[in-house]
Image (cartoon, rainbow, N blue to C red; front, side, top):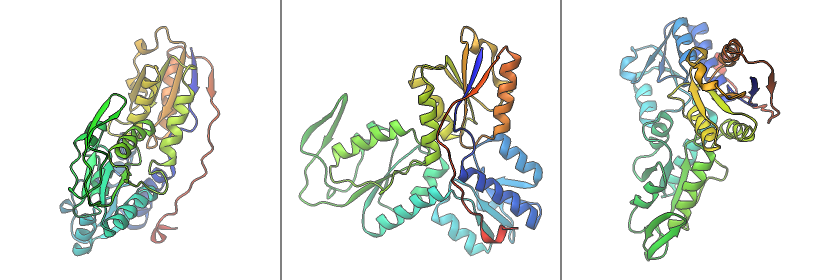
Length: 331
């Protein structure tokens, strides 16, 4: 049995920055440091920060007056920022700069009067944060079926009357005399292929809809998905290191499965089951953008204990992205 390691894999620049912000805040101000929501979606990382004195909360009401709070990498609604300011909390914003880019785009479009469609997963903190950048005129779609059911103001332009056909996808639209501007943005950690299908459906129903100047799906998400696609035909089973609440990790497992590769999402080596590997001599290993390399190393050791021999790291895109820390935390 041989191991092929995807490249790139694991931490992205946004995750590294978010973790560093919590660690620097702990060093500079001491424990406890409060963090609204898991700073990144990885159990190992969160448990490690808890051990250092970070306290994770879901609502600012759980943060005592005068405390220091860190906003997670997924971003927060504007209402949360206002609440923190009103209470005088000391805030460090660990929102990934690529998520912030989407927030700014939403704010700009909303100011210009657009109805805005967000492509993303309901309930995900990034989606809640992005939807919370504007009051009203925001619509969430998770799939193509949602596009067909999307209700926008009567003045919004949609495709010709009658049934509109995308292969296998019936949609209905109506021509209206007046056009209300319509735009879309996407969650940064979506499947590139899934997002493309939904965008195509949006354009088919609303020909005048506009999208972001640059794809919202982040470089790290796309690179990791491309690396998994490149492994198709080279591996017989895929192990994806990442937590179950990690959107980008789940997408990696899905990309492998769509490519015909049995794929399993694990938090760590202890979750790997020997029967997954039976009759599958080539094992691919990758990791979501919030999963540290130490967990990958543990998975490799577990595979070796189960009989794996050679280890090969595949060629891939080199990532040289760095995001600066807040000035107050520079040491």
